[in-house]
Length: 108
Image (cartoon, rainbow, N blue to C red; front, top):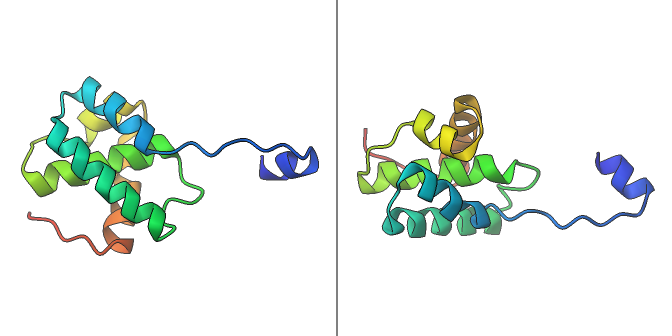
């Protein structure tokens, strides 16, 4: 894909995961407080270049999942994955990546 873009001199804007937070949250009935926390997580991920090359919908879903865990809103990876239209595996993998690279500690 990237090779084609380069060869054809096409410049496709990169989708920002933050634009998907509200959409996913609305579908999963997630509060505004959680959404704000997810946006903070995504801003930090962008700052540290953690999000480069990753599916923006999966990143947004994982950030919402982390925010839910941080703030005590009980949502499963499946609920968030379904709302985002991605697999649970995608949410789990992006969750692990964000947690590790941003050094996020969460309550059990």
